Image (cartoon, rainbow, N blue to C red; front, side):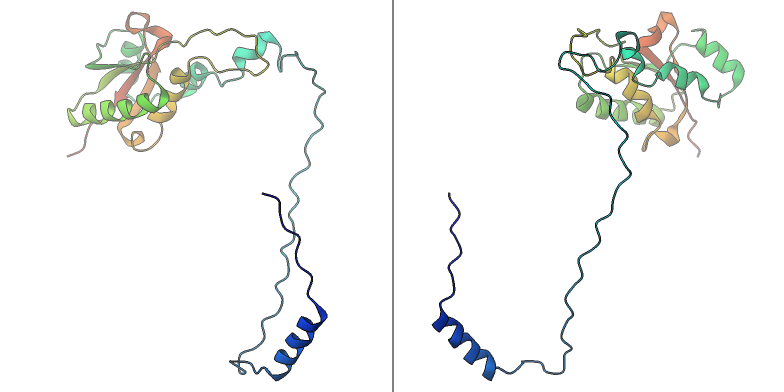
Length: 197
């Protein structure tokens, strides 16, 4: 719908308005007249660095580094300090401990996987289990033809983050990549804290 042009005030209307305001009295004469608010100064953000030119059809990063864009979850887990008994941790990493329960998240979306993981871990804590296995899969390898990099194995990267966040964080003592016989890079051992009475 086209916008209408504002109508101009006629001279006779302006004369009438001036007569009205000449005889008007303020309703609350004791109140101070508010000052005109000053416009807030516009904050300037940090200067953007100069961007490299980009041509249509180019990839944003060299193919060799595309898989390196997402933080290496394996490296992050290896850098974690060992919070559980070191001997038991060694047995767990070698696949000598049998998980007491397992959750397979294959084929689930992030929206489906998150509540399933919450329910699984909280149930395991309530049942006083110590070692559970969460299977995420390694993720599909997709066609690399697009200019935007894609993270492979979204669940594989997201599950450790969820385990380190509330409400699961207080219950999780250690997370480690599973041994090959329990799924290897496509699964995680989750060692739970004992419930205090």
